[in-house]
Length: 49
Image (cartoon, rainbow, N blue to C red; front, side, top):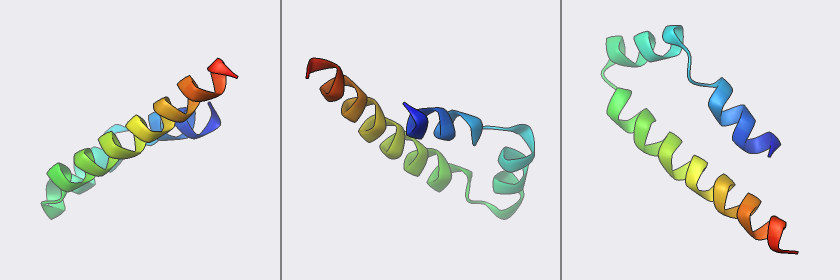
């Protein structure tokens, strides 16, 4: 849960603006999506135990 909350905290206007400015927003979004998916899957699996 902490990992997922940390990923959510990373989404802020300043960081998004910086990624837009340097042309890396699409890459950042894809990495965020992958990391959030893994964190959510880990949380789901831990709830089964």
